Length: 393
Ligand code: HEM
Picture 1: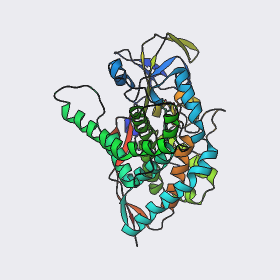
Picture 2: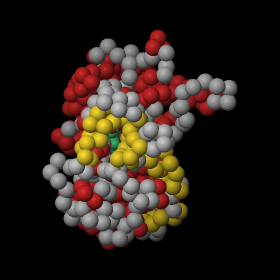
Picture 3: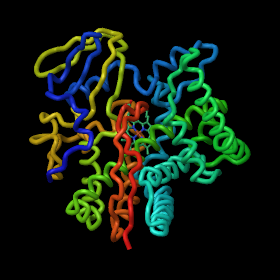
Picture 4: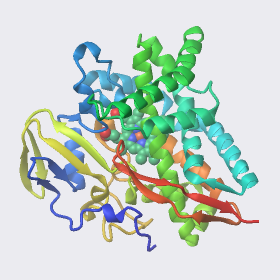
């Protein structure tokens, strides 16, 4: 199908080599095998402002959230919370909620006849994250709005006079989120623990401040990503009636293949960053490449996902008949790989499927205003704003 990626203009113009160093010493990776080997090697998280957090003086430092942890402690938290993210948990616990939230959003769209898809997708994604984390006491619309504002604020830490207004704004947004969403949820779970992430963290003796940071992390990891993916998938399917039809009529497996192939082409998290924690040796095209300890590594996910050695011919084309090597995720590195690989993959695919199936089945649905393509710095990816849909009479 002749589908061109929305973000194709951000691609590296000619694919250089699977690995190359730039003048600043940063190692850039565009090859799949090399990227996977690096993500499994002795590296530390260097994306999502993880290194900014390390600059905070130790006495003020809080326990790092899951995304910034490494080693045994990280493995332990993943193992202990894995039960929230299994396909069985998605089916039994979260699918009914997904259907209910999607149903409500679609009803509202049908009544109002117009809506911004980005706002609808934010509420869908926030509803699911809130349930997993345990932030479901406050009304969803307000929670989605607060998280959306917070996750799009400039989170760069570093106090200078010029940056003071931005810094104070973030403080205000964090405090608002804490007071209205996190603190009430913690209080309720201290009184009566439930089967969710906040209750788990409380059982491990984590402080309110630690829990607040985990809530922001899960919000960023689970909400912004799914919100933008739903928008980009809808954008492609609304422009390609044949694909939309196939999705709406298809069985679960076919719908999932469409979503995975779209995520491969349009990875929401555009770059992953790591820092080599020791001297590394990586195989690349039959040669050994030495990566000295301390080197910053930038993994270019769009190019990696289109590495023809891994995904076959016409790597920038949308194709449902790709034959990937055993063990390669159909979204290639769309959900990452190695110790930090996404825990929310099944949730994300299920909620996108539930929402998009209902949305795209609406008769008379069309794009009233094309979305504005922007960049989201926290996930190093795209965002589609002012994406107005209309349901014609
Ligand atoms: C389409 C939607 C999504 C995409 C594209 C996505 C993508 C990713 C990627 C690429 C990573 C790896 C980060 C790294 O290696 O540095 C990641 C990690 C993570 N994701 Fe997702 N994600 C999505 C949805 C979700 C959802 C719905 C949740 C939870 C509710 C979630 C929770 C997480 C968490 C907690 C991590 C960190 C895991 C760790 O560090 O051990 N994600 N995600």
